[in-house]
Image (tube, rainbow, N blue to C red; front, side, top):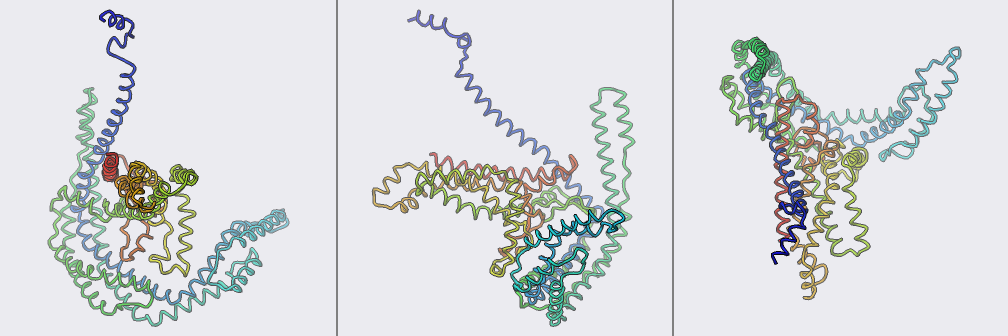
Length: 635
């Protein structure tokens, strides 16, 4: 036996004699790949934290400058003036919505005729301009070119007449009259077609007619708008002073940062001459401390004026409020008026609180780091690159991402899970061979292509449908912007359906066949077995499919950047379901849009990394939850 072992050791490969083998080499190879994945993940986390965590101290310094320079003091009054302007805008919108609602027939007829004429002009305009700009003198030798241009004009005219938009509110005779006038229209004609002129006059007359009963409302709106003029004048005067102080403070900060950079370079310099030169430059880069107390004293001299003007504005709007009607006859006008009435108590409360805030405000109050953190996570404004003050509030971005995800999941969950149940439980082999590849093929469509389809096709079609009379009962119709939350949500639903479908079907496949066999043996039908046995048994896997679909929706960038509208503002929830037809911005979209344009290492740059960290944590949490439910299915 010993001789056999000795012979075996002699014939073994030299790597095996040293403790190596091909099997162990393959094992090490795959283990190194797994380890490399972990290392990459750790490096990503470290990089995000390194670039992002410097944001909060930098943002705290910006908020401190905002306070020291007096911008915060001015914003106490500016906030109320902005609210006053927004309320004035709401009242104006309600006023015109009431008039246009009553004159809806005339407005739509005018709009359709104008849209038809504009579509024709867009097609024929370039050739028409060439004809008008071309000299028509035979001596110049331009007669041949002019003939060619006129021939092209006629071709463009015929093409344009075949692509005219629909006009459902014009009679057939009116449309034919308008088309005939366009067909006979000479390139030199500059007047609008007679029908367009006539419908414009009818619309103007209808507006005048329906505005007559609203004269008192119009006068009330004008009085309300004029009530804030004095406060606006004072704010404008204070703005000039505090902006100059802020610029001086920012210049001093820049010089101080440059000096720190030079000192750090001097400490790391190995050449004594180079170190000496850097120290000289650092000592020369000492910023003069800006004079804050002088401008601040002038600003505080306006304190009593601000208090008096707030009290005056509060009194004026209190007298105007009873003159504003409680309701209007048109639904849209009534909705806007209700929004104004809901905003009124908040506006009055802010006006009452402003004098006390103005009295106790002090530019020497410290700005703790917690204020920067709270402002970022609860702020409603994301304002960057402005002349006044940059604010980094993630709330509107988070709400935009959440609302788009809600729309996407409301569509994708029933479609994806329903398709998986049908294919797995009810479809024959032939249907499975058709349906499964088609659904999974959607994953191969690039997201930028879907974005183009959303802009040029789906968004346009949805907007055209929204203006039809038969769909006016839908909240949010007609749609003001074709790029909105609903459009982006529909496209993201299309992208997430394959993920939900594939994982949900795998979950159903993983249910032991004995479950179905036992159910059928007890006399249950196929439908009963599916909904009472198979789906409950696969519920954890189906829930994991939904969570992974949600992760796909939250992490998508290109579609939302192209289609969501990119408006950094919390939607107007007073519109109810109609708020889903408003533009929004998202966490992923803001990173893709702004990261390539910000200065490296700036506060804005680091703010985008904090957004990335938030997004990373959210998606990681979703995927971890999905992984937990997948493990439950496997067990």
